[in-house]
Amino acid sequence: DVSVLQDRLRVLAARKLTSDKKSSALVTQLTQLQGEKDKVDVDLKTKDSQVSDVKIRLKEKEQELAALLAKEKFYNEELAKLRQGMNSSSSALKVLKGKGALLLKKFEEIKANYSALLEKISKLTEERDNCKEDLSRMKLELEKEKKAKVVTEASRDTNKASTK
Image (cartoon, rainbow, N blue to C red; front, top):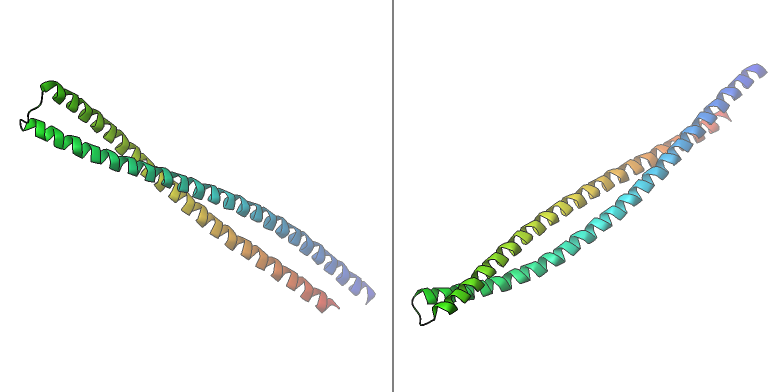
């Protein structure tokens, strides 16, 4: 009778040791997941900041583009008047054509920069969305690990209660 109780006591001690090891492993995993979550949070804030900066620069470029478009329209109207035979000297026409060509070149450069900025915003937004998805997934994993730990502790408590 005593040997049976001793065997049972050894089995219960082994189970407790196994349970403690599992609990320790779960705590370690939870700590790692929390660290990863914190890192993703920091990355997400950085990406949001970058997107905000790019949006501000984009608005500035849009304003520059609007001003250049207005100038281009004005110079195109002037060129049209000159082409229609208004009283102007040919040297003034050449100067105006040169200015018009420079403005067109500048306009094309700004248009290219605008497109590049839009593409960059798109990429940063996509990265931010991916980070948010990763964060959500990690939160779910963290909750699952916490629930598993609670279940493990509850079963351990039940085992202790049943042995008494």
